[in-house]
Amino acid sequence: MFEVRGFAAPQANAPLAPFKVPRRDVGPNDVHIEILYSGVCHSDLHQARDDWGPGIFPMVPGHEIVGRVKAVGAGVTKFKVGDYAGVGCMVDSCRECESCKRDLEQYCLTHTSFTYNGTEQDKTTPTYGGYSTDIVVQERFAVKISEKLDLKATAPLLCAGITTYSPLRHWNVGPGQKVGVVGLGGLGHMGVKFAKAMGAHVTMITTSAAKGDDAKRLGADAVLLSTDAEAMKAAASSFDFLLNTIPVSHDLNPYINLLRLDGTMVLVGVLTPIDGMIGGALMLPRRTIAGSAIGGMAETQEMMDFCAEHGIVSDIEVVDMASINETYKRLVKNDVRYRFVIDMATMPA
Ligand SMILES: [Zn+2]
Ligand SMILES: [Zn+2]
Image (cartoon, rainbow, N blue to C red):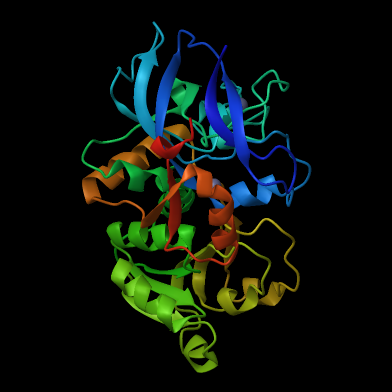
């Protein structure tokens, strides 16, 4: 075991402060990554504030981790020292269950070890995330990142990227399809870029005309203002697929009505109860509502390779580690286009 510099929330709702993060010694199948950048996901804030139930403290958030491989175990085949590597929302799983065998470790039937606010497979040892200078992780749970991409702007791909890429792939989004992305934030802006790169006709569905303009800059073909009742009516039953990234409970019915026969809306943002869904609107005409969570490790690598091929990264603003509490305040106000990324070189000594 060794200790590295990091930032932690000592308890729920407390400001983040410097913390010595314990990391395990590099095992045979481990890679030791020097963290260069760590994205700031909205779920970091939720978990540090116990919004989703009691967390494990001290908590070192961060599950959008990119850096350079510093050391590898004797059995590691995927990485060599000096490679760029990324770690996302999970660092281990049972690897034996039906989900793990299908490379869907995020749906492990036994125990997914999340990158922070979780435990290792012993269900006891706490995990600590990316707001730190170093991490040691099983090579299966690290992905390779092309040198062609701007490293700091790849960090959000590890959560915001894969969260939107995976459902677009699973539901076979492609040319000839009309896709709507609901909500323009960290997730939505990646959804627009991916759906466009996959060849679909992409509409940004938002309450804000200004965000609509921004979505066009990101590649959206059209904008639909959800506050414009006439426009919503005119767009009824016209979408093959909707990627709903709104992170809070909201009325789904206006969006359900946008789906055509056999159209699907996938929820990737909202975790809380949703009331008032109208069964008849799902039945006529045969519409589907589904959910999706991040993606497996093989698919995360596929996404990274897709990004390298298409030159896709996130739109980011780089911040200092010591300003993280200010950054959280700005995050609450949605004052970010579209992801904060911490430059780990700014970690206080
Ligand atoms: Zn996240
Ligand atoms: Zn499993």
